[in-house]
Image (tube, rainbow, N blue to C red; front, top):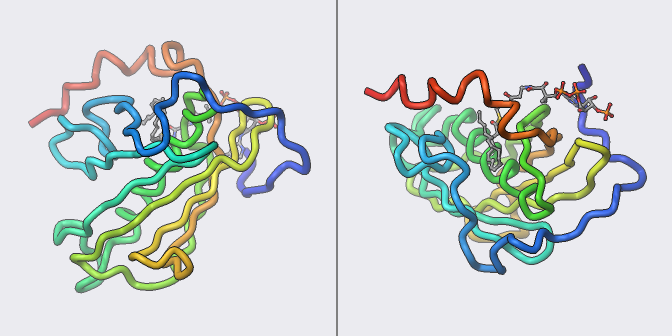
Length: 174
Ligand SMILES: CCCCC/C=C\C/C=C\C/C=C\C/C=C\CCCC(=O)SCCNC(=O)CCNC(=O)[C@H](O)C(C)(C)COP(=O)(O)OP(=O)(O)OC[C@H]1O[C@@H](n2cnc3c(N)ncnc32)[C@H](O)[C@@H]1OP(=O)(O)O
C-alpha cells in the first residue's frame, strides 16, 4: 500500500464531465445517509457541495458546538471529514466515482466555533484509476488558509464496490 501524495509528472487527459452541473449549481448527493452530505443522516455535516469552474468544487460549513474538539475550536477529525467530502466530490467533475485511499491534512490555525468555513477543492491530476485532489479551508480570506489537504482517491465501479454492503445502509438508524 502506498502512503504518500506523490503527484504524477504527467496527468492522464482530463475533461469536464458533460453532466456535471454548471458553476454555482449544487452537485447531487451521492447517498442520502452519508455522514458528509446526506440529508437523512442522523448525525452529519450536511455539506452542500457546489460545482465551480473546471475541476473545482466548493462548500461552506458553520462550525457548530457539536463539532468541538479543543475548547472553543473545531475537532480535527470533523475538519478532516469535511475535507474528505469535498475532496471526494471533486472527481465527479471528471466523471470519476471514487473512494478515499489516502488523505493528508495540514492544520494551520485554530478554527473557532461559530466560524463559517469555506472549503475549496480541485482535481490536479489523474493517473489510471488514481485521482489527485487538493483542498483548502479559509474563514473568509482565501489568501489566509486555516488548513489544507492533499488526497489520492481511487476510481471504483460503484455497483461492484458496495455490492456486499448496500443492504446494510439503513440498518444502524436510531
Ligand atoms: C463510505 C463512503 C463512500 C462514499 C463514496 C460513494 C460513492 C462514490 C460516488 C461518488 C463520489 C461522490 C462523492 C464522494 C464524497 C465523499 C467521499 C467520501 C469517500 C470516503 O470516505 S470512502 C471511505 C474510505 N475509503 C475506503 O473505504 C476505501 C477502502 N479501500 C479500498 O476499497 C481499496 O483499497 C481501493 C478501492 C482504494 C483500491 O483497491 P483496488 O483493489 O480497487 O485497487 P488497487 O489496490 O489496485 O489500487 C489502484 C491504484 O491505487 C493505488 N492505491 C491504492 N491504495 C492507495 C493508497 N492508500 N495510497 C496511494 N495509492 C493507493 C494503487 O497503488 C494503484 O495505483 P497504480 O495504478 O499506480 O498501480
